[in-house]
Length: 120
Image (cartoon, rainbow, N blue to C red; front, side):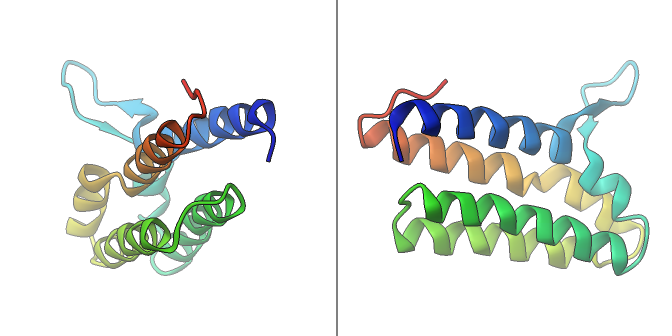
């Protein structure tokens, strides 16, 4: 993948991770949550939909050449978040705190920088 295309893809993935994990803030607090935690309020369907979206981020990392060990860590983060999201009520809060998508995009950014790709 060309560097310009990689940079564009990373911008989209960062935006997606922010929307999923930290796009909303509870007024007068520093607590943030995203669509992932909100949609997880719908049992099973919400968790399945957000897990699929999270796995899309992992797929894009694979397409960008991320090594297997990094992909495994990313899948592990998705699995933890899906497991937490499946716990009624408490899972929503834990899911909002874990923020697997932001973690995964940060790990991918770190990998790309180590490969000499300038990402924001």
